[in-house]
Length: 364
Ligand SMILES: [Zn+2]
Ligand SMILES: [Zn+2]
Image (cartoon, rainbow, N blue to C red; front, side):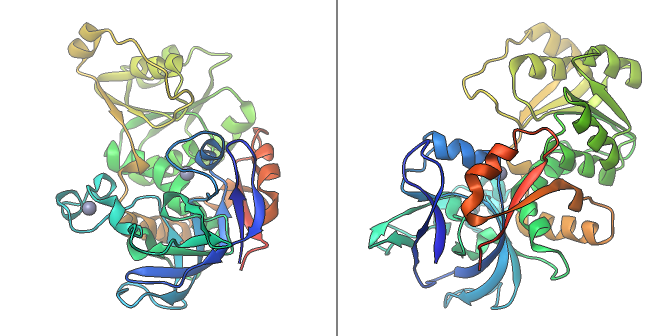
């Protein structure tokens, strides 16, 4: 089968013939029908974030089950499935108490050193990033990292459910536990931030205030359900949020991750409110904190990983809402490309009018 392989950091993606092992244990073989381009894959292709070349990246993957290992119980050949980054054992204390995104033994979803590698080229092992390796015609994934979805959902939309959607919507619904009547600020209206708007609408937030620097992104945010938009290059976003809400927002979500924006987020929330940090632009960035300001105003700052998502619960939920017309996914997809066009696909994402790019051809 063909897969897009990264041979060296910064060397780009090149399609190669790669051998995929047969499923063992709880592994599931999936014929890939759509694979989303997430920024994390571009970062991982250029920097060492824990995966070494040669490697197959890609972690927003949807397709059809083609074979199952002898111990698989939850999936069958022909099922439509979505892969998810959350690697969970299903048996540790975190997993058993509904926090699969804090699993203590994520390595259970991977092969051990005694097993043959899942991916090889001419007998040499190839890294399968995130346990997924979705930039490929076929993938071999542990059943705990796969979720069965309704067959009526188109594959490109389904693929996005695995990372961008759960990260944005989950931050609002799960991590912040947004309630009907709450006011929320979403900073950054990109492919993840737009899903936070979806989440805020579903949760019943009455003020959904979106901040960005690009007018075309703010226009899109209004189509997703933003009740107010602020272009922060024109208007002071902190003053404007206080003007709209009266005493500050219940929650602010930072999808940008630069110190100035994080600090503004903290100033936008009401006493007792929460700032949720999702975006990372500079991994080494630090934010000064005025301790007395935090104490007096009883504010919370929380880092959010994967929208505190329990994939096998949350992904079918968002899929159902999409099918009911209550959760927008079609509007996220700006461009469809072939497996051998990944470098050009990432180039296209520099255009602020492009929200998400999905591989839909050259696959299985
Ligand atoms: Zn991602
Ligand atoms: Zn676990």
